[in-house]
Length: 194
Image (cartoon, rainbow, N blue to C red; front, side, top):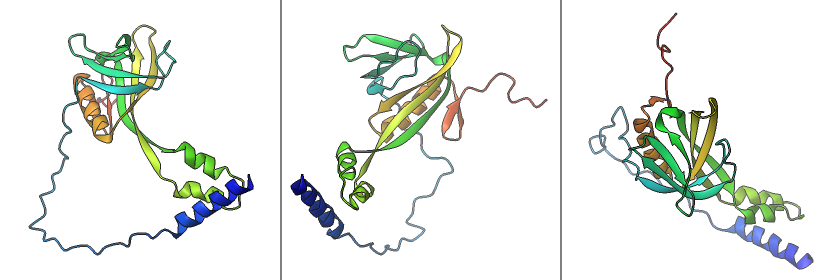
């Protein structure tokens, strides 16, 4: 046990003593060389018809988290989640979607959590130095047509680019309107002032 503690302490000291890269000076760029900034960013490319996703829960009756695929079923007007055996697990009709948005969560690796729990003075600071990975989630708030209840579900996606294209494509198919970084379905008469 003592040997493990010494090895961890040496690893921390080596990590802290590692050389860091210095900041480089900026190179000058003429304003005439810079591309013209547009008022609106370019829309992301359309999402693929089927893509890998991890269901994180939230749909009534389907609590098991699992990896599968999300599919756009334009003929049926719905978003379909299929399990790893390509069987339909559940679907969300486009018309039932009330809001969509993307979420990012920083996750510390298991190794960093284990090292930070070692009872050596100062070793807990290593968790600050350990890299954190970002996980991207598609969050959908919906009105369940079967139960007449509202709910929210989320799907973990592989990349930021995939999340952006899925959000834009699904919002277009569900006829949602942009609101900040999200897409919503305005209620009838919401734009009228009393």
